[in-house]
Amino acid sequence: MMDAQLLFMVALGAFVPIVHCQHQLLEYMDRRIALMEERIAQWHDQSTRHSTELREFKNKVLTMLDNIEKDKDAWRNEMENTNIRMERLEREVDYLETQNPAPPCVEVDEKLTELQINKAQKKKKEKYEKLTDCRDAISQITAMKILKRFGSIRGLWTKDPLATSDRIYIFDGTGNDTVYVYPRMREFTLSNTRKTARIKLPYPWIGTGHVVYGGNLYYIRQQNEFQVIKFDLSNKTVVDSAVFPVEQQVPVYGLSSFNYIDIAADEEGLWVIYATKENDKNICLAKIDPVTLGIEQMWDTPCPIENAETSFVICGALYVVYNTRIPSRSRVQCVFDASGTMSIDDLPLVYFPKRYGAHSSMKYNPKEKQIYAWDDGYQIIYKLGMKAKVES
Image 1 (cartoon, rainbow, N blue to C red):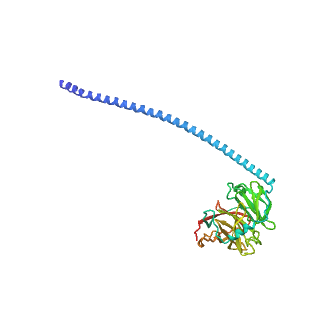
Image 2: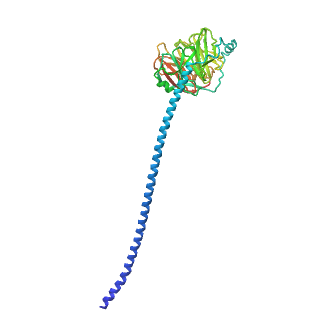
């Protein structure tokens, strides 16, 4: 009996420490779980607070974007209204100017002085000394854009290469005293009528050899002799004029008998393309002073008049465009470089895309490096690819 009691006491003594250890472990686990629950609760509170703040920030941003969009629409409407008012004002001003043109402020000169003619004739065989370092020569026609069909089958349209505005000037036909003016290309393209600003000139123009340059219109008038008229487009007055000092003129282009003088603009300034009975097989070229209209230099070119359609000047080189009596593809077939720097290898044979009929005019814009052409009543833009001249 005593042995059994002793055994029980020994077993109980061994079990009590084990129970105590288990109790401590449970208390430790309870504390850790409570701590984790506390941290989870904190994370939950922070997440809820951050979600609320993010939602409030998102609502503020959406409100700001909505206000910006409303302001943008208001600004767009205001700009459109301002643009409409400006265009209306421009049309009204142009209309008033055409209705009340200023009278010519100078008398038409009878002739250039004999000294100017003699000086130009003496320099006839000299090479042209260029005013700029322009060395561009045509390599190809890179693009063509047909704008619309306006007016007669013959005419001229052009821009001022020295102006900051985008005004388009239209000469409809081969003889008139009215020039149509569009403020921008877009208005010209979208317009279906002739309800636009007009300039009524004091003297009628003839042919399609006119040019707008430096705020002035240089156009050809035929009375007893051919005259170059310099017309100020800002105050609508004739500021200068001169009789072209050439006798017995003939049409400069065999396929464009309406053109006796063709004025061209390039990087160097103004040029005059013409022909005379004295040299009735080839085209002649002259450099003129845009300020005084005086002849600075004259040349006989090797380019034939026969089958010539029109021409233009680039960097002091005359490019003559040829076609056939039955219109086919126009092409540059003769080039005359007044400075004599273009080598034989530079002389291009450039073909224009075949479209409608024959070109009655081609006006090169040195700022845009493209040609404004009038082809059987269609207004076309040719984009030019250029290369540098190789000096001979």
